[in-house]
Length: 210
Image 1: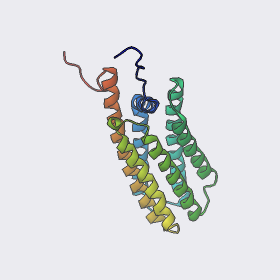
Image 2: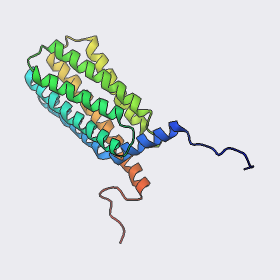
Image 3: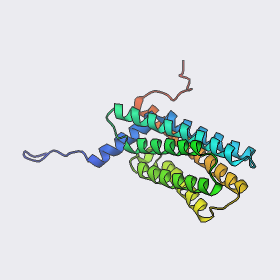
């Protein structure tokens, strides 16, 4: 390098991308918790397809609260490290708000519940897709994109036929929750591997050779 040649500077966009990737990798267990809660909710919905609307709303509310708390915890941990946390917090707060509304008005009509679920799926899916492009490709970006697309498609499907019967709605909701949960579990274990590689520690459950 000749005298007077300016030193190369890091790309701020890449720095932000790395920060977001590191946050999700360190908190892979929160993503796994989110996926497990989603799969559990989907199984419950399949086992009881003719449950009353009140029971379905309570299950949905509980799932939203767990999902929202997990998102807020991830955002707080990111903020403590002075890393990007806005999208994680926004999604967590949205999930809790939807859960509280569903619990306060459990006697709402099926149509109102369909619109509430559709709005949540569309907004949450959009936030997840936006967050995915702050994640490195080798950290599982496209799994997060697929989770967001799954949410958006579910919301659109509900809006196309908002007067669908409870049984069909339950099947749709269960299928969405299980697929979404599987995608989040795949992402979580991909992030766990990346975190282990970054820290030099073996993944949990790995036995070191004697």
